[in-house]
Image (cartoon, rainbow, N blue to C red; front, top):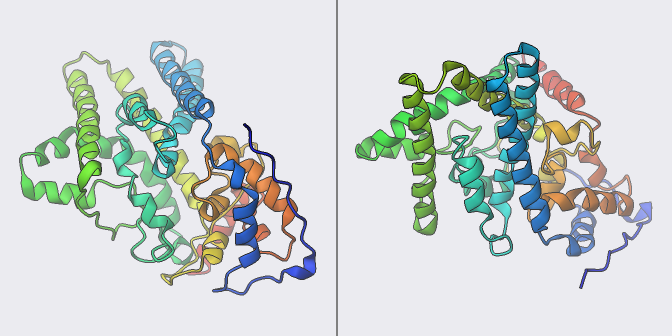
Length: 360
């Protein structure tokens, strides 16, 4: 039986005052929990169709680009491949939050069809992202996904972004050379696990050694990604895989990484200087960009509602637009909820750039 839609309750503006920094907007938290109770079930058709449909288009476009003899057509197909494989790759974020009993087989299929071919196995993000969502760790030096970019020198922003172009080389080094070597060189293995096995933005983060079922999944996923990396490197070196095909594959992987790094720049305001924040302040340090277009291109799979995701991290990506609609209708301007809403990618990039310039 389908769940009944919960109608948002409009609150009189006198009921809420703008919460002070460090305090919780208890009414916002209560409404967020109450109004979204029927939105937590993942839709299998959405997950499987969206993710693997996007991947199929992305791989087909890449193969078309490799086969094409026209420069403009090649460029267009590479762009399509980047956008669609980027969308498929970002389901790694959903994998970190999913109750996998409700979507059996999805993580395995994603790693086979997307994680291994793109040298992006899900162990790189699983566990890491949970630390980022911790109330005790968010925005502190223990957060692997946080740097106070708004308080750093202006040159760090372009360096942070452009560095993503090196992703293919780094992944080939990690999975094609150093990873396999580390299986027989224990000191190297410790370094690889601690320093080169996480999708992080905080260079001070050291990853702990995996344990239990996660350690077993890690081994299988790493072996699959390494098999892909070694195969691509060996067949290219032997002349079996044409250099053009290798270059276009690298261009697509680099494009996916660059797009994701640009999105990461505006996922938060990056204004926390290491203090532990309330959940409301974590929300306000994150961003929503509700406009559907072009947000669905640069922040797909629900990530244009990143602040809302921090408020309700277990909500499936396809439920976030409806959750945003309900909360926007129920909560007044005096609540904290509208404070995380922004108009565009450009607005947020400009804000971050200006904050950085003030630190000169």
